[in-house]
Each structure stands twice: as C-alpha cells, then as structure tokens.
Image 1: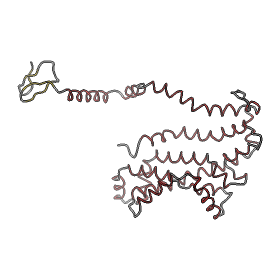
Image 2 (image 1 turned 90 degrees about the vertical axis):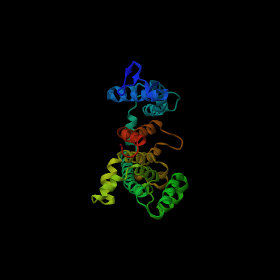
Image 3 (image 1 turned 180 degrees about the vertical axis):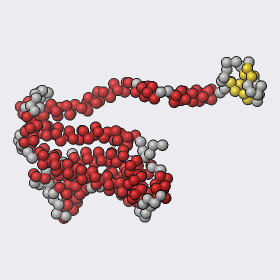
Image 4 (image 1 turned 135 degrees about the vertical axis):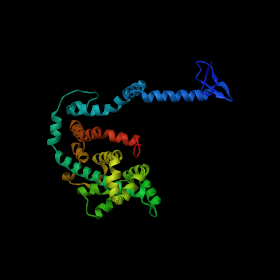
Length: 323
C-alpha cells in the first residue's frame, strides 16, 4: 500500500483507483475509458507529423482498391476518344478498338477549318465571362451577406429559385432580349447572358457568411471603406471559393453548345464546340476528325483543372478562414 499527499493509502501499482470519503475505490469504467482516450490523443499529438500522415495514408487501403476500377471506368471514354482520333475513317466505322497512329487527323482538323479562329473566339468569350463572374458575383455575394437592406432575404430566395429553372425555359425570352439589343450573331451575345451567374452569387455569399466579421470591423476602424475592406481584406482569404467559381464558369462557357447554336449564324463567329459540328455531314461523319478536334478542345480544360484542382478541393473541404 502507498500513501498520497494527504496520508491516504492507495493499493500499490493501481493508479486507476480514486479516493471518495477517505476510502480508496476503483475508478469507474467510463472515467477510465475517457482517460485512456485522452492519453491516446496526447500520444498522437506527440507523434511526428510524417508518422501521422503515413498512418492516415495507409489506414484504409481497401478504399483505393475499390476506387481504382471506378477510375478506370471513368477514363475509358476519354481513352476511346483518343484512340478513335488516331484511326482511319474505315476503322472508325467498325466495331472494336483499332490502334492506328494517324496523327495527320489533328493536322487535317486544324487546316480543313478555321480552328484557330474558333479557338480565339472561345477564349475571348470564356475569359470575359470568368472575369465578369469573379467581380460581379463577389460584389453581389458580399452585399447579400454583410449589408442589411430591405428585401435582402427575398432577393436571395429569388436568386436561389433561378438555380432551379432550366435554361430551356428562359431560352426564348433571352433570345428576344438579345435580338432587341441587336447582338445576334456577335460575340457579345455569348457573353451578355452569362456575365453573372446565380451559382457564383450563392457560393460566394455562403462563404462570406462563414467568415468572422471582426476582421472587417477592424479594417473599417482603421479607415478602410467597405469596398476597400472587400478587396484588400476579405477576397485575399477566399482564393479557394473564387477558384471554384472561376473553374466552374470556365467549364460551362468553354463547353457550351446550345446557346451559341441559337445566336451565332456566321462561321467566323463560331466557338470550338459549334465548329466541331462542321465535321459532320448529313449522311457522312468523319469521326476521326471529330474526335481529333474534341481532344484539342479539351486539352486546355484538363491542364487548367489539374493546375487548379487543389483550390477546387479545398473550397469543398473547408469554409471561411482556418482558425
């Protein structure tokens, strides 16, 4: 038996006993379990960061084995696309995969149509729409999140409601507005309806709501205007959501086919997706040229997504500022 500082006896080697009313009693099971869990967390916090990352990486290897077939299944259409772009016309019309390195299909796709002009049109439209969405959606989202005015909540509900309206419903009214402005068959007709999107306003507004307002109040006390606070204090800490809005807007604009098909008539104003339609005839389709053009139109999007994917993933995994 051992004694504690107060002279009370404790059984030797039994640190899991407690004193109640001057008597030594066994520690309750729940208290012991909590103490054990706390000890494990303390040991984990003392572990080397590399060891912790290594344990997390190999904690569930079975998930990787389950996701590998799904990844291969997702990549198979792109693999088929690349293989078909390197085939002859006769091979593309038969069943099965035929490996033939016909790289001249890419050269033919570039030379048989004004591909570079279509690429320039698509780039101008996409870059303009992305920049406009980043600016206007940031201003609208910040106003809805921080400025109190009459009808704030109702306006936000109206914006949310527009997310549930498919484009086919508003397609004809939008076309009438564009025609009334005299913008049919021009590149501004492709930019105007997409300069600000409800998705961007909604996403940025939600991130603004999760950020602590004390930082903005400190900037306002130091003499910064509301716009200066937004530009110099708030937006620099929102790279992830801004990157998400930019990537999603770029993908939608770059791959848009229906709206350009409606408002663009002359071939000089075609976008890439609309220009690929010229490789298809009424009774004959040159599939290798179509696939080669499709591969070239998707390569820029794949490169941009790979470079910006960490911002995209971070915006889905975190909200606001990290403590």
